[in-house]
Image 1 (cartoon, rainbow, N blue to C red):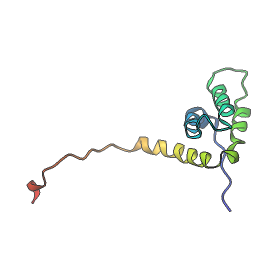
Image 2 (image 1 turned 60 degrees about the horizontal axis):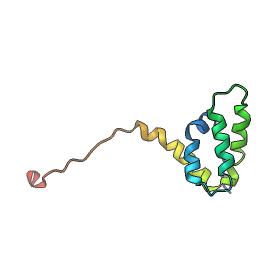
Image 3 (image 1 turned 120 degrees about the vertical axis):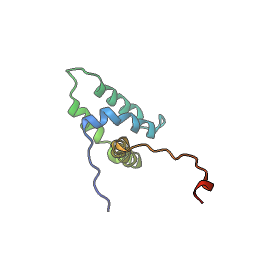
Image 4 (image 1 turned 180 degrees about the vertical axis):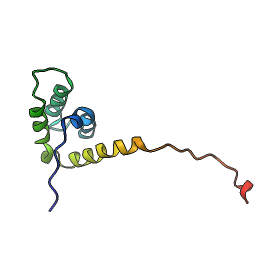
Length: 98
């Protein structure tokens, strides 16, 4: 039996929610609902209850199935990738070393 899916924070939804929408695609049945809720989160209005919206978004995690799993893996990986240093391999002439 698998582990329970962990809820995401409001900050994660605001920052990385668009990645989930890209993974789902516009034809997914929950796309419009989730896109609307993410849009509400990103507007700096005082009368919006961000905790309630976040709870509503997190309640969709079992219906999203693999999309949720792949999305959470991706948002965990993005900060790790940002910390990596880039390196480039130069074309070298092997004859110089033989």
